[in-house]
Image 1 (cartoon, rainbow, N blue to C red):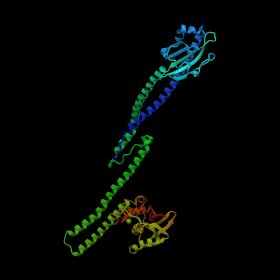
Image 2 (cartoon, rainbow, N blue to C red):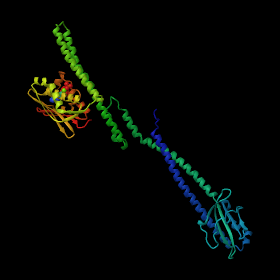
Image 3 (cartoon, rainbow, N blue to C red):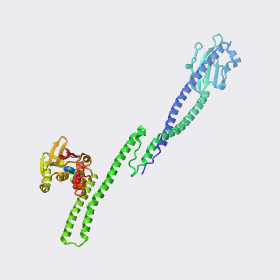
Length: 468
Ligand SMILES: Nc1ncnc2c1ncn2[C@@H]1O[C@H](COP(=O)(O)OP(=O)(O)OP(=O)(O)O)[C@@H](O)[C@H]1O
Ligand SMILES: [Mg+2]
């Protein structure tokens, strides 16, 4: 089951919208609260101002009775249509002037004495039975210059304030939604533009095919965030290209190296068949063919070994081996060939090595086979083993013409031969050192070579001290 993938651009656009809604809402909420407080403060200050105005009118009034006769002087000071409520009561509770039948706010809060001046902090909140909310200020007022005092109750309904706030709230919501939509659209466009670099890289990557492995992404012009990706992709292409060319080179070499011995077999067989021969000639043909078949079989076996080593299909049974004993066993195998070629061999080895006995012998065997081939008559091949800090190094050294420095880096490659004259005779496949390299890789070790012109050529195998 594959997970559905959404467009990154759409996702980021939606995210922008969510963030915009959150930010706009938070800012809107803050401004709403600030406005509510400011409106209430303004209303409270307004109540105090009107209270002072009513007190002033009271001072100009002769008696409580004249208030009742002329209530309009007082009622005009408060505008009921703007939610202002006024009740003036005599000391005994008798109503002298009022613009409302609501009486619950009168003397419901602490009354400011006639001698002291009210301030906005003296206003109180009060809710009516019908749910309406009021700001209330109760104060006593002195009539004329007399000692007679009346109760003034002044209130303001929150109606007007709430209407303003309600309108404001709607505007904030509208702005938040519009802002979110706008931010989402702009975010989408910006991200789409920003991702154009990714699309450009993808377009470059699309050009890469098996026949077009030289193409690389333009990492230098990519944005910093994508440069690492482009570099990594290019590195992958580098490795692919090198593996790919190795592979086709390998197939080339393989075809070429199999063709020569097969051609030899065909030609010599055809020549013998071209006319009647006696049995001795047929026998010679068969034994020559047998040799050729043997080399073909060895070559196929070597290639199979390399392929299996490449795919980790070779089990390495490492054990602690006595190096000297192992080297002596290899030397023994070459006794006959060396005495024929008048070549001597000396062994100088001590200590033990962690290795697979069979693979170690095969590697050293390949090196000695080469050494025997390139050592002039009368030469001495030396097999040495020495303990080094992190393992054991086994070396095969032989005198001879030496190897040109230009060949050294490729010597361990498959089918690589430094002297074409010899390979033309198809006496060697050029796989021996490739197998040595594979064996050392299986052990977690390494193979190396040094060579002097007309001096000593030394191949060294380093085995790490612990089991791989
Ligand atoms: N001791 C040596 N002295 C000089 N040249 C060497 C020596 N060992 C290897 N070489 C060069 O390295 C080449 C590669 O060696 P390698 O063992 O891989 O292949 P080969 O010996 O030619 O063939 P194979 O081992 O498969 O029969 C040889 O062809 C030879 O040119
Ligand atoms: Mg060889």
